[in-house]
Length: 214
Picture 1 (cartoon, rainbow, N blue to C red):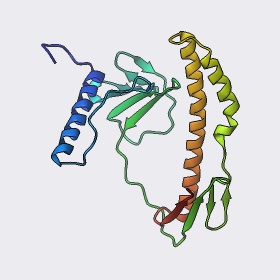
Picture 2 (picture 1 turned 90 degrees about the vertical axis):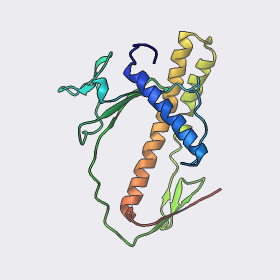
Picture 3 (picture 1 turned 135 degrees about the vertical axis):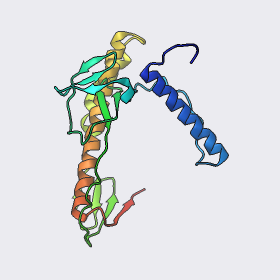
Picture 4 (picture 1 turned 120 degrees about the vertical axis):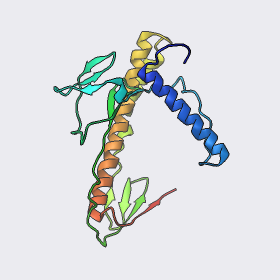
């Protein structure tokens, strides 16, 4: 920094990330770590934005459960779980659909592993069915995209008719992004629930054989 100019917390974090990226890149060239590509600018087409606040930024969680951020103020938060300890860092993310998420860095105790078992299961990923287990259980494909195809086409047609760089096009783009986000969230939730059920039934300590159909 030149002179006595003060660096804002989010700007300082960006500079630290840039410094870390270049250090890792040059260490890769020297053989100190695996090689990686050089740092590059963020794509203009990427609508995801994020800002990270460390302890020095003087952010806090209020007694009422709100998130108090510097230069922003108190923000109402819908908590998905109780934090296991006092967080050291919070990252606020805005996705392409205009939704905001807060991610906290906390210390957690090691989780207890599931009890061991001799059960094993093979998973065959297919086309007509999402998966077929070795025991004969068939898991139907939910086809989330097919269900939302009609609404997606409708919103995308509206987007194509909007004038470029206009406010109406921005609103239409957000609607299309939200429609895609709902499909992605439904897929992710289905995958997590199914994988958790299979792991708990056969225990995570055992080997799960998988074979994907090309």
